[in-house]
Amino acid sequence: PRGPPPPGYPRPGYSGHPPPDARGAAPPQAQRPPHPHAHHQAPPAQQAAPCGYQVRLSNVSPELTARDLAEAFGEVSSSRVESVDLLRDAQGRATGESLVVFGSMPDAQNCVRRYHGGDLNGRRLQAIFEGEVVATQR
Image (cartoon, rainbow, N blue to C red):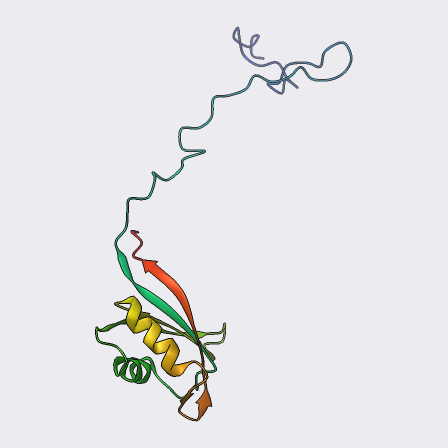
């Protein structure tokens, strides 16, 4: 047979936790310092430059493409249309909503004046100005 375990070696049945105190409850464990990345917060956002002014369109015909919308709204804007996003559901079908970002506030406002309640491809649109959007850093 082998000799006794070396000093400091855990005894059989030893769990590594301190025994319960006289009342039967384990003594409170010492608090560990927080992990250095546990509560990491992003640094304050730098002042981002505006990238445009967003208009949300509803009741957009599902046959229209982003290019179709960009061309239509390009006619009412003096600067370029920055982006057009056709919103889709989980199955990839068009929801009838679109987000259009214009390079200037007057262009976004012209879009709302021209298309809110107006017709595009046989459908009466709702156009709502949602405000300034800024580029986000990733």
